[in-house]
Image (spheres, rainbow, N blue to C red):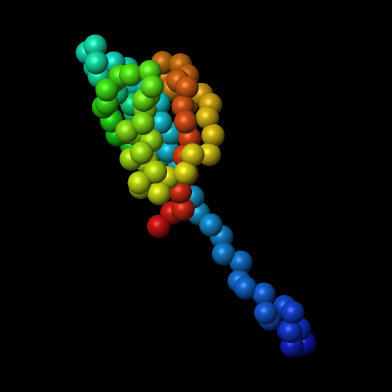
Length: 99
């Protein structure tokens, strides 16, 4: 058996990063002044949905839900349709490192 070369021995071990993902979609209005958003957390067992309600104003949109995700370490990675039984909803996608 040949001993490892110095350059090979100095390499750090390869660490495989594991990610978790979620999406944010508009659920609808709750009365005239409040709206709700779904945060869908994806995992091996399926999807867990959390509802966030906030004031409906054009200038704020889902600010409360996005701020909540950012505080919890989620990073926006893209947007696109989220396919559900009733059709497709516009969604914003997020990821973070698994703990």
